[in-house]
Length: 319
Ligand code: UDP
Image 1 (cartoon, rainbow, N blue to C red):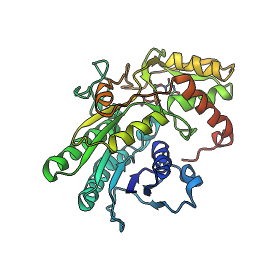
Image 2: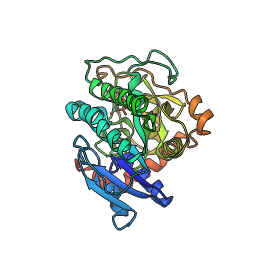
Image 3: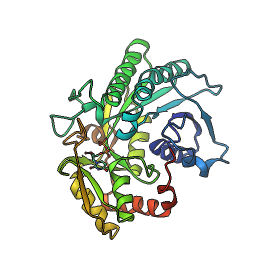
Image 4: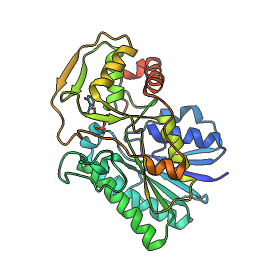
């Protein structure tokens, strides 16, 4: 049993990670300021003695009484509609927040996993994206607050590793979906599911030919935990699903699966929205013996079920 700190523990990925680690009998401390994470994501664990939650903004330093063995540094706004609205918070979480967590890791001699993102590749010019690709990011564009925060976070994490020998590893997380995404999260899967369930118009940005590769949450958690508990240090590893699909195809699939009568509205493509995104996961396959197992139908069906059962919430804006 280890003591594990999770930043962003009330978020979509953070809360699933906590479920997994609690099942494995670890002692969990969750830090979250609930700027995008929701306390209700951990409601089912509120009487669990192995979970301690602390309301904290990680841009402020913090010390933890317990000896920490591992830090999953997950905290950050991650949806374009969020980080474009709160760009300064996004940049400061990725920079100062990451520094505070690296200092904590160093103090406790803990191993830190940085949750990075496929966004560090920007609007990529190479397909699929390998870890060796340097990316194509507009440093002043609307998405730069997230892309550059995460690029800085990766650079700082590597600097601590090189300077202080801090035990670190970087996960580059590609589009991940599943239950507990916020209904008003703004990302494509929750948007299309809710629009379809309500028979409202499906909002496609651009002509829908842009692509993403969608990884189901259970597979992502499996990858993240395998990476954390591996002996890989000072390296970045892509974690995502290598099945590429167009946004139009996703909308059709969701419409069919929900028996929806929704029509489609085509909106302007947001500035710097990546045209193609596709992970090369050879490194994760070779080093972690990991690859996603859930096909898109199975993952979408569980996610649709979740939103059906939580339709009440879809009426509210509970940021
Ligand atoms: N998208 C869309 N309609 C929506 C939300 C998103 O067409 O209601 C598009 C978005 O422009 C992008 C893709 O779906 O091309 C994935 O967007 P998302 O916000 O889920 O995540 P991203 O991969 O861009 O971070």
